[in-house]
Image 1 (cartoon, rainbow, N blue to C red):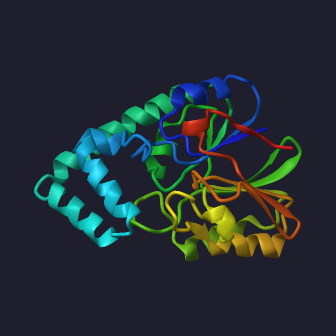
Image 2 (cartoon, rainbow, N blue to C red):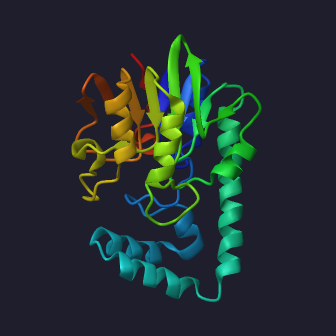
Length: 250
């Protein structure tokens, strides 16, 4: 069983992994909204790289109100144009994702940058979109829950209450797969971004149900890639856009 997360547009590499014939779990963030290493991505195509550099600088310094003001100034009077351009880029990216995953039988959930409804609609036949569900995969009871930590109010985010409800609906599983990290600071803190992005409901689930494994993504440069919460081995499956490598379970 192979797991990837944070594909962020690396669809050629994803296709190579999908072609291996092994069971594949994709833990969200297929779209490349912005790559903060290069400032490339969908935002740069819409607003230009210079704008992205300015915006990234504000966010890195924690000036989030100023970042929102900058975006509001840029988008004022152009909302429809920007929305249509972003929609076209999203559909183009998901078409590439669908081609990469065709015939793989993969299980795919979504992250904060994704548009879950559109992703579910555009995945190819035989690939399973997962919002919150339990499957038996290779003899292991696997629970998958999609969604990112609430921050910007975008479609791929899930409130903490909604996350708790979805996790509660799984019941006990042997392996939990989410996009978000549990509220364990070494796992949820990016060494570059600084601020933790973490889910208390995920941590609560781990403490209550004690699955053997928890796989997740979202944090591109974590302080730690693995950690134990009680008996549960938690592991970040990596920033696939940068590594092009899946994690093999076991």
